[in-house]
Length: 81
Image 1 (cartoon, one colour):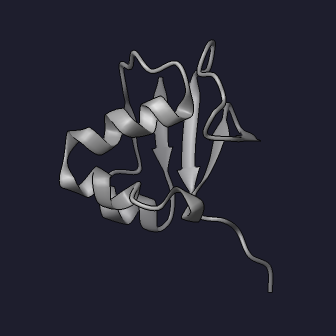
Image 2 (cartoon, rainbow, N blue to C red; image 1 turned 45 degrees about the vertical axis):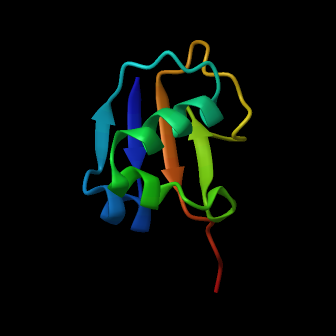
Image 3 (cartoon, helix red, strand yellow; image 1 turned 180 degrees about the vertical axis):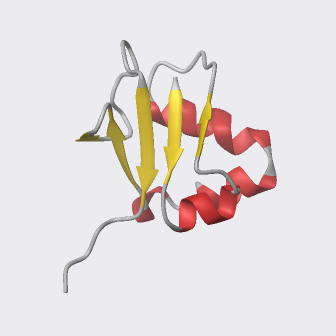
């Protein structure tokens, strides 16, 4: 699956996107796999309350299933102004 990173998440990880093979069944499981990779991933995913996730361009939750998902995007909450 493709994993996309936006804003400060991208800055901390150092990549805008990557293709990942995962055995995770939920977004939370994927996050745990990513955190275990390297310190830069652990830093990016340290506080999930500061992140949002979209599955195939639909806003979702961290307990959502990854079954059939082709794209996961992580980004900070959007604010208006």
